[in-house]
Image (cartoon, rainbow, N blue to C red):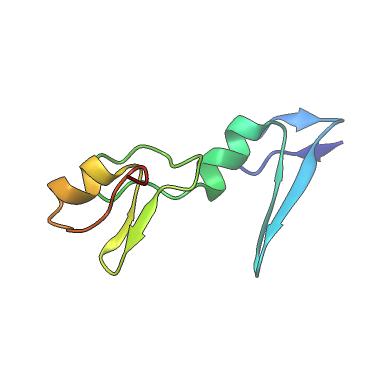
Length: 78
């Protein structure tokens, strides 16, 4: 049995996640999210979807980007 890198649980159904040079062993997607998902530069929530990016960082939505002073980003096309 392998051990989850985040919670330390010994589990027979762990999985490995690899992103570039970074990798980890996890017992759940929840733990993988805590280890890999970026956080919003404004509110700090984990970004599980595409988010929005600017030269100032990544944000969960255009509202958070605008609250951080980023202009010109939108959550949907008009």
